Image 1 (cartoon, helix red, strand yellow):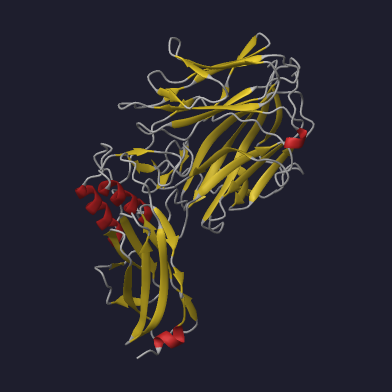
Image 2 (cartoon, rainbow, N blue to C red):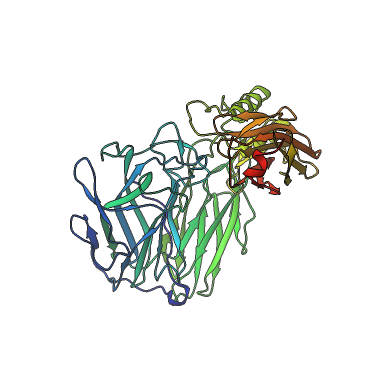
Length: 512
């Protein structure tokens, strides 16, 4: 089972910190869905698996299923455990017109449409090892092989399926609790992509004297020599007269940017804030920079002391190294010339990258080209997307792309004018053909990706404006209105092609 980060959950108007009565662990809700659900669920759909006849709540696609629990006992911590069924053709993080396929679990202390939602998991799943998924980490910044950490694979009897045993613990002290289980709106029909849950159990730990009063937040990963922002939300007991906070970041990491009067004490390796002679909530923050050679996970620890009583800082305690760029085939934090050309060639032809059947995103290609042009060395930075940044500090630029359609002998002339911002290093363009159409006379060395039926150009290096063209040829007898769709990517940032993009097929098909 996976236990993830800890959070405060509340509607702002109803938030309070209260003493919890000394009780044992309590199960406040459980259901195996062998019998119908009650009004506590917003959806009562149930289905039975083709193999094993396992009855579960579902199937669902992009719509939410909300569980409401009311009149809860005094508590500070909640643990929810369940089995998540991922059914049929989930493509994971990088789908082509079919993704990304993302799943979320949010919680709140009031109706989701009225109250602050806090996220327990925001991740993607893939039912094929040929695709990437974010799980067991958060989407979008991690690319794990599909079915990573699945507890069951192809045991339910669908065309593809997997089961994940999930468990989440978080801090919560209100009388009401809402769980919102939801797939992304991009999920396709129930016959193609769906999900469900089974064997849910909600437990509350009421043994703690106080609810958590300090909560740490970390980014999804770290990169070498890139500052990592850390924040600690503090809300002492309303009766507090004095409190202080001590934080111990990873040893050897450079500590900077301490706010709120805090100091770093090198002899103990601790950051110290306070004492504060009040009971006001505040957010304490600082940054730490991992040195060259840092690998693997690193731990954070700390305490809050209130009126002479200490308790650990809750929340996220561990951070992992960020992932390598997919083009970096020898995983040495350098993107070299051969890696750029191989990666770009695979993107142009729609070929799978290694054993991944999903197309390469254009933004990853221009990001790789920008890093190569900027000195080859890069690091991971979770605060940007794509999360790979040149270590020389070159700034990512953007630009515009405008399309136009005009007559051409035997077809339609499609033109795309690309205007990069000054300083842009790498540009790529891709434009999707309407179904059944053919293409000819592609300019500027572009080519047709027959896999995705897209015309592609690039990588184009430099910041000069260019007009790219090709002839689009409608199938015989075509009628109706079609639309051309495409994008231009600048140093890892893509924009949709704007301008004249709609065409009457009757006109196009009759052009001489």
